[in-house]
Image (cartoon, rainbow, N blue to C red):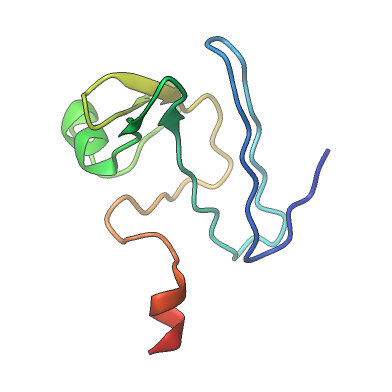
Length: 98
């Protein structure tokens, strides 16, 4: 298992049908997660579109996470966290410079 330190990132290329397991090792640290269509990087996972597709604010196991073109890009298979913020923007340097 590879551990990625807080405030760092990692890109992984997954093919259709492959899985990735993300574990929050600190318990209170957020894990910002992005997904892009490898063949067209303008298609990306969109929480706005996901909320309207699943008709709720927080995804649950079995729910698809969809792109800005309303196509499934990831599926949440297991959830040990239980709470997912789909409303706030991800962490970025400008937030911490203020």
